[in-house]
Length: 374
Image (tube, rainbow, N blue to C red; front, side, top):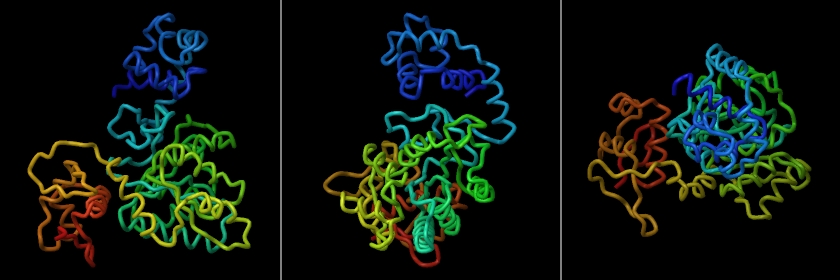
């Protein structure tokens, strides 16, 4: 995307009363943000959900200096502005009703991420932090990308565990990407960006106001196949994330805790209402397995590869999955060899292998070796 095109995306995002849903409606109607600004007021009002006031706001928009400052800040800080029409934009996030049209990204997004959100109390207990780090370390070692909000407590433990497992993790902020909150997580922010991504929908310099966090939470769940809640009180914001996840059609999991602790009342309530009780990583992976097709864009196989059946329905392999299977044989192959032979990045290899393993095509052996499953 050229800078001239990008400026129209940001400008439309900044127009008062447009909002995410209005943005989506306008782009669907006119084809691009540039075309929206070139349309007449009468034409704008024919788009669904666009009122006379919104059409007038678009016509009268004149804060182009702000748009230029935003682009300059992104360039200066090494932040990518990823629009919803980009192949890098997370596919799962596109499925939610009000997906953000522009994401501010520090780090890298991967189209192969198998994502799971882990959230919980800011006032986490030692037990809660320990369990969270262990779960997330094991998930990361298995190729799962852990998504959380970089808040104190459980969120920080989730990111820390994923990093310890040498995996990718994504932090979603309720502030501008240049505003690290809480400030003591500055080093964690840096580590996440180095091996995964820190993202937000909020413009530069946006402060972490309480009103921003429900919007942040919908992105956390929207990015993920499911949401794991660890240590949530009866009024915890994590319960809001779980509710949003259900509305988005995502799986909800909960880690049980002490029956005497007020900090687990919320998680126990989720379990009573149908959330899956989590005792280990297998409890999670068994549930997200049927949803793995969300992660793959259906394609026609380039070469004939035996397609296994699951529940009577053929599973379609992506081009990337086929490429890995071509390299593998009946003899074990080390992950590093796969990386060298295919040219894929290690984080992408791990995501593809996780998908193939869950679909039943390969199995992992001790010593980071992979073999086609008999």
